[in-house]
Length: 185
Image (cartoon, rainbow, N blue to C red; front, side, top):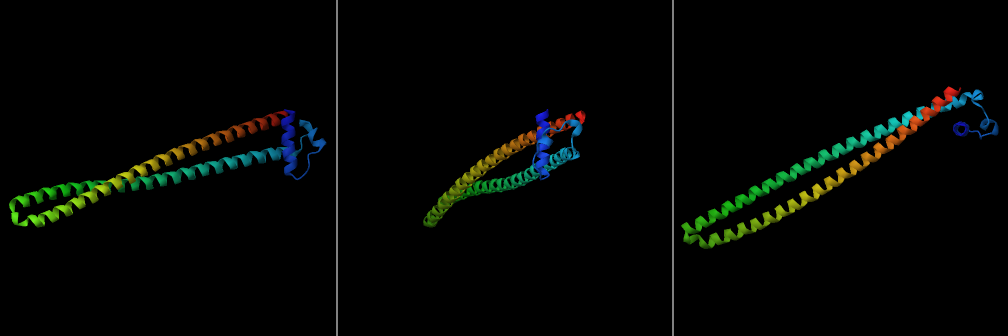
């Protein structure tokens, strides 16, 4: 208890610009200077301000994370629409190939022109398949990034909660010390 009083008085003396004198170190509770009480209250106020700042920082980080999640979800929805359009295009290509085959059967005179069209449609199919593969790869990368971001935010939130808990324990400890000092006064 005496050591704690000495530390509080030491901190208070240093913050007032003076050195810690032996007279201050040997003070008893009955002789406790007014500035010690003021310093204790000042420390308490500073800790409360620091807690509010930390809570504001956590809230700001949470809001930023929510904005990033919304942006990533919008990008994911856009990629899903693109993938759906690609599937519809692929279905359309298959339908056009069937039509081409029917045209070949009906009109032998257009065989050469039909062959050229078929080659074009196959190229389009390869292009669409490549586009589909590209979109699927992008979607997979985006999902991986999103999962990584979520994991990072969870780690940061856990770290912030742990830090906040440490600060709360420190505030409680200082409040107990203050109460003990006041009780001894």
